[in-house]
Length: 349
Image 1 (cartoon, rainbow, N blue to C red):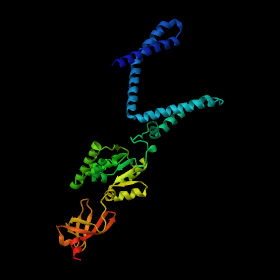
Image 2 (image 1 turned 30 degrees about the vertical axis):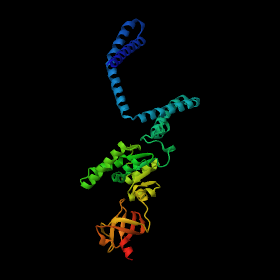
Image 3 (image 1 turned 90 degrees about the vertical axis):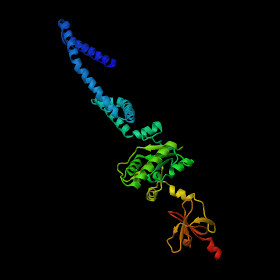
Image 4 (image 1 turned 180 degrees about the horizontal axis):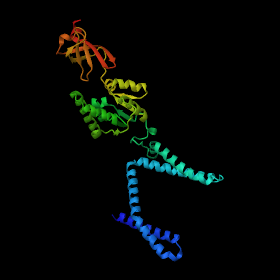
């Protein structure tokens, strides 16, 4: 390596020249030639040890710098510069103090440099947001973003799968955020010994791959975690508060917890219920009775969107497709239920 050879040559030259000058200054003029030669030889003798020391120090510094994130290095450098500038502004006044002024200036520079670097490292995320408009975790600073710009997905809505169809429609705006702790939970489900859980977890991972690969909306995996929180639901709520975003879920319990903390929630089940076709009392429907109801004589049918229809007196039409007359519609937390009776019975009356 040419640079190592050049560095070694410069080190040996400086050591020899330093030994020569030291001997020249230490001994008298009559012994100048001998002392200078001895000094130069002494400098050459210690040069290999000094060279090894310098290389070891440089290697240690290089290894330390490799472990420091670039953001920490930049933040520390900015803090150091700011600290030195503040010390330079205060130094003239401190230097005027009698007796101790000149000594206090040294402590002023050291203290300002240390404090500036320390404060900058602790506030590196805010500093990064100020400079680049992005947070250290990769999300944009939400200072100028509308509330709910970030949609944070939970495990249940990923496994559900309808989020992919919703993204495909183009109705969603902003950024879909997939927290790392949600990914970890999904991987644990996919590795579960229970076959049903394992299939659900793998389906969730397939949905995530589809969203990241094919969907028009931006998707971001967020590595940030909250070690003080053990429950995933609490982590989601805390992350939503931090990003001023919305939690995307179909988990009823998470929905209620988020509402208690003032976090906006997008519940995919509520959306599905809201866009179902409205059915009014008196309308006629053609349905197929497929099972018994809870009450005697009742039959149960379903619309194509999954809405349950309770047919009064429909048990005797089991397995048949009949026309029914809607009598009432009940909206519940679980969805919409329709009550009806066979149209044949209406005609008989």
